[in-house]
Amino acid sequence: MTSSATPVEKFDALVLGSGEAGKYLSWSLGAEGKRVALVERRYVGGSCPNIACLPSKNVVHSAKVAWYARRLTEFGLNAPPPGIDMTVVRDRKRAMVNGLVEIHNQRFAANHVEFIRGIGAFTGPRTLSVELEQGGVRLLAADTVIVSTGSRAIIPDIAGLREAQPMTHVEELELDTLPGHLIILGGGYVGLEFAQAMARFGSAVTVIDRGERLLPREDEDVAAELRKLLEAEGVRFVLGATVESVAGRSGDVVAVHINVAAGNETIKATHILAAAGRAPNTDGIGLQKAGIELTASGHIKVNDVLRTTADHVYAVGDCAGSPHFTHIAFDDYRIVQRTLRGEKHTTAGRQVPYALFTDPELAHVGLRETDAKRQGVHYRLAKLPMAAVLRARTLGEVNGFLKALIGDDDRILGFTALGVSAGELLAPVQLAMSAGLPYTALRDLIITHPTLTEGLVYLFASVPGK
Figure 1 (cartoon, one colour):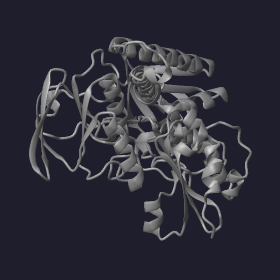
Figure 2: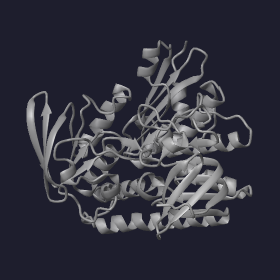
Figure 3: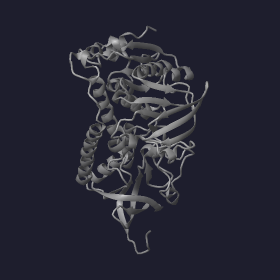
Figure 4: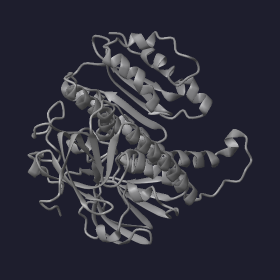
């Protein structure tokens, strides 16, 4: 609660939330000599280094090591299979996060950004009231304000689910015991990455999703192959399912009552993870008092340079409805940074690459086959099994395939990789696409042997003639 006696502190720039775009904007503006304050209620550096991208990949890698350990005889090692100590997995993740937080603190200090711990809310145009973590209130105003409040995991409105105290990805990353049986509600990125990781640690895993097939936005051959690979590792999928109710408590005993085409079923487990999507963090922060409008989905309404409906206020990342990827939030930072400098850089037509960090990984950029067919775009298809990539053979990881769509002008329309380290194959293809190069530029490139990137030569050499 502020009083009329509370002074208003003036800054050149004020950032609400320290996620990817917000923190980089604060650092760059601070380095330019601006007086900058950043308000963060909990996670230094946002969700990515603390509770999302990086810690989840840390756990995914621990799970891969556990998977290798069960295959020791394949590599000539005659050691007994090890047990899993989830406290070690958790502490390895925590150590990485602590190191990342320290790096962030150093960068805030080096760029002369005043980092304020507290809960911020708008009280008027470009003015925030901050309830400080240590107590008390500060009133802050600035010439430019950036909203970078991110998003949060949704707990679906299902009878008994909240009472069951399900985990989200945040609690999942803090597990210190191995679930006997984990039910995951949602077969998206978060659900699939954790499903495979926990199965590799030794949990029984059941993924429940209302979709009739896995990853409905992906091409059917991609989704089918990934499902087959995960099922081979013990993950059970229950698709086309409606969850009617949940009973019990996660961490003890839970029972999930579902309806599928064949009838009703009850699945019992020890733990339940809600991985059913995300909601923007736009409520409760006084946006209406600042003249900042929302879209029908609850995201902040922005134009193609991420300017809101309020003068000199920008919104970036998840809360602005940008695709929910850290690398897209980083591009949001570049857009706002250049806009503030009077340069031109917009969201229009930008590439949106992504990777799903299952093992093998799924990586994609551009058009899918389903997109091209729906839009009536003519294409030639090149497809190559990962077994044809010789580096994959040396690793003994030959599952999956590469595929590319080629236009009539020989440019690359889209690229998908389902295979070991698939995400590392995106950048050269993206560069060719953004430069408007023909696929032959990659086909004819001399790429070091034996590397995974060499597979691009084989793939583009298989493009059918016109």
